Length: 518
Image (cartoon, rainbow, N blue to C red):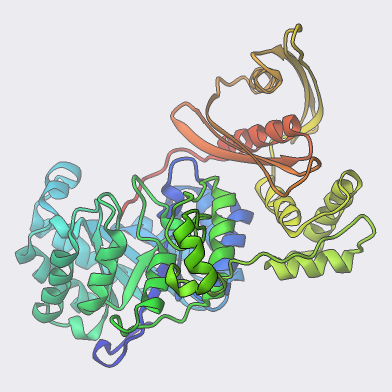
């Protein structure tokens, strides 16, 4: 159980919810292997707590959280549950094998949630919260409680509610700004009043969870730290529902750079920030905005002549963050077709991947195939192969054959042959406005689904005419939205792989499940 005398420590505990709240971003669904890879990287980054998921939402989610609990050592592994026994049972089943498990229970606390969503009176909900915490305590002494929409709740209700759940055994009290409503000054004041007026608050960890609807999630989190919160819940790249959550990298780097005014610290390995950001962006299919603080590609770019002159004379004139602090410099080593398994494995380890033997063999085979097409294989190419392999785990459909026809005076057409997981072969031809559209139409005919392409993005992984192309797509069908990614030196093949990756994800989604948004 994590208990801290908050009066004697300036450490800020980092609670990462990328795999739970972050994955609630539309289309950002990750499969088991992708979740595991992100969790491994979060452990390398040094986060204190990983909220691995919401296990009751689907059988697949429960299994993924269980694997994280089994394999990831170091951080506390946390699972989210509504304040009902069935959710808590599922959450505990998922994390029971973790070395340091935590149950996170939430229930609405604002009048608008009580009246319109929960349809119960405040006393009933207070009793439900107490019963849920007591039930969770049967499994573990590390129980976190969140009064959802706390910043719009009445304080005269919050005080007795929090006192009651602390008395029931909660070890962490988390104050969510669920809809990003608070302003920094008022949020900091709320945290201060809770510390001063809620009996027992000195015995537990006080946490905050801020959403970014008004662009204030990071500012609110820092204001809370200044007023006594010692756990901050945040996500890599600030991803999350609606406008997202507080960005982990911004909070951590702000505490590091402004320690003269913010005398607090984290135990994060800042040199892993860029790598973690890049991995999450690639696997979720959510690009990092170019002007994103700390990790956007323009964060260290200077176009103004005055700025360039200043930087050449002294970096400190226009840069307050050293790119090396966050691990922003990519390795320059490259591989060729003559590189052996050991060299490839070494480069993968340098990139932060820990692959099983079977995975390494699969990646090496794909490396050799790529190396035959390219003169030099760069670290970025190798990383793309690994991420493509992780994304393509346990597919329903595999690409067996692709042929397209296009030209200035011909009707674009495609012939697709797919292999299903039952080893059956399915083949269709279709036309379209271009070869990629035709290929997608053929896949739709095979799958028997009316899939809508909501977004398409093509990038070159490295430079040169033989660069590996990476395609990210957003697609939806029947109210479900997913992302897909694929890589190849042939951009049409990469496009089809990305579409199939998204299709396979869509087919693997196990029902809608209950939604969460603390």
